[in-house]
Image (cartoon, rainbow, N blue to C red; front, side):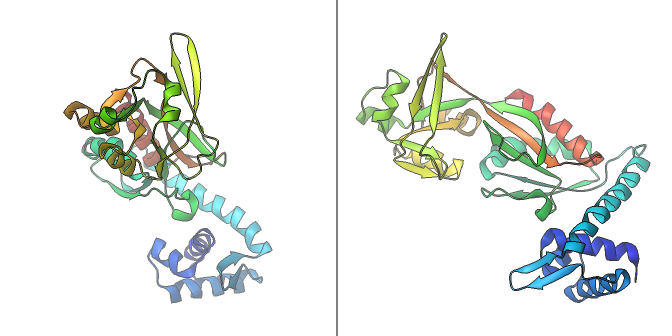
Length: 296
């Protein structure tokens, strides 16, 4: 048994909760994964993982073993990173997850510059409206946009922010009552992001005055691109990050409303697992994105 390989296999299985997924993540067949786990369990003399119909779960001993082994492997990676610090080029694969619309409008456009600066670094990007788990998905970084962070188990760094535009299609504006103040939004059809909006309120500010508008959605979606499409089609008024609709506003397919009022900006965060050591590729990517997103 290659002890080091077996330890990596064990951690991959615990993180993926599946022999098959673990094999896919580290490039080994399922039989090879099973063989390494059996030999490792024989070596330590205890059961490390329990196989159930729902997947693979660590035993009590396996959980304690994982805490120590994962730190050991992390330290090993840290040693490799420190040794390569003097290298001129960044190498390896960086796995990043992000929402679809955020990725298309803000992140992907600046990646050619990152690639030019780090040609030996490969990117593995996952664009999804479903929030991906970093550890389970073996991601280095998650780029997320939020006014308030919820996940305290991860480290975070603000890398930028964008303002909102309250907008609607000309066809909707022409057939609807005029919008003179934020409170008037309560009498309009709203296209809103998110599945749970029962308690959602939009806060507006202007000349030292603030007001809150209770959101009652006529239409909703978990995808900003879908919200934009519905709004362009004249189905209501939406609050959309300005970079997402800059072209539509410039072309007149959308018009901005309540432009004298401002809203709390949408903050963009880089999220990464808690650790005493941040891999060089992760740190350089986050530093780059922080510089690149300052234009918004």
